[in-house]
Length: 298
Image (cartoon, rainbow, N blue to C red; front, side, top):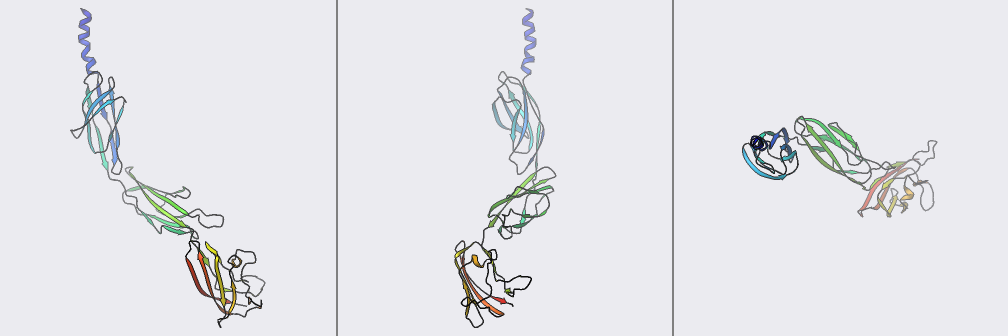
């Protein structure tokens, strides 16, 4: 008889032991998908509960085995539990959690360009982001280096000849405000392997002691050498020099260039202004026909 009385007295305590507890305060930046609210249980899994936002019931969450359970929350407001039971019976619930919605900063990049030449692979950036910004971070896509200044100039990776490496690079600006909210802006940069040509306008084939500028030569990049034709004319329109050898007229070649002599007799031409006509195709096939003048100074 005594055993039965003890069981009757103790059984209500077992029923009331099942409990769900929700707590916490969470800041949700308005560009984030969700935060996670912790809910702890006392009882026998699986657990089932209903939660409310600002006293409006939401979904039924069933068959939960995780303890604690992290409820994804994407709306601002006060979250509470309105019903709960474990595998045995209905239980109690208490506590509340707050989700506060915060405005996020807006990362904005002001860029000088989005296309660069291999000749000058340097780009200037300016941070013009909106919001109460506390920290900025630039991440550059060519070498993953970082910078934290508002205005930056980045030199992209170059090859052994000092020319930029062609490709498309993705640079990022990450901004974080005083509330810890962040935003990221992306800017793509195309470094083109574009043709270029440098043609001087004078040379001095006088064999002086300085031995400078003795030959007429030029530099080029990304042209079709088999399309090259260079002609030089005197003031009377007579052809005095011509060549189809682009490499032979390159300043980078050993003994490259034109020495200022008449191409038929190898006689030295007199000082004066000579005109030239240059035809070539760039690597992509576009045709160019350039005209100009050269001052021959002895």
